[in-house]
Image 1 (cartoon, one colour):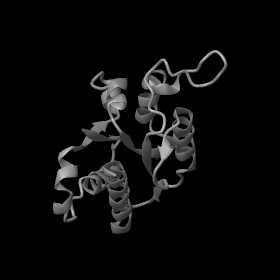
Image 2 (cartoon, rainbow, N blue to C red):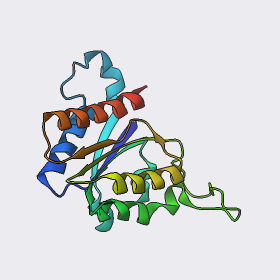
Image 3 (tube, rainbow, N blue to C red):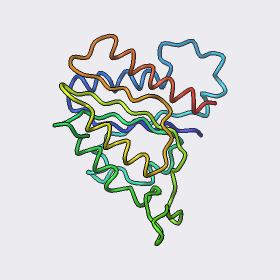
Length: 177
């Protein structure tokens, strides 16, 4: 089964609305997908709150089991949420972030290298720091950016939810091949 893992920290109504739009897009909620019935039978969109990692309800195995990722975070004081950072802090070495003695990637741990991901960041004033932080980590893991980062500022409107929907749909379509 092909799995798209949506890891999010959605503490506000705005980010929750965007998360719901991403999930709808990934599940092709507004699309006629009768011609994709066979492919969708072997496709799963799994939603996981970033805080599940802090509560011990999720760990590196959840990331290793996925074929692609959608990351959603608010920009808090110019940074990714602490909850999303904890996801990476608590799994980095087990999902391919380990280093060999020569400084190269050590493949003795599980590897997620080459897997596609998408990123959505919502902020009131600035998202640049949060984007830079997440992209730094995903680059170190060797993940492949499959869609331009969706950076949204201010109030969430129909245009913002449409961008989130498109992000979800794009990653799902990519994984479906």
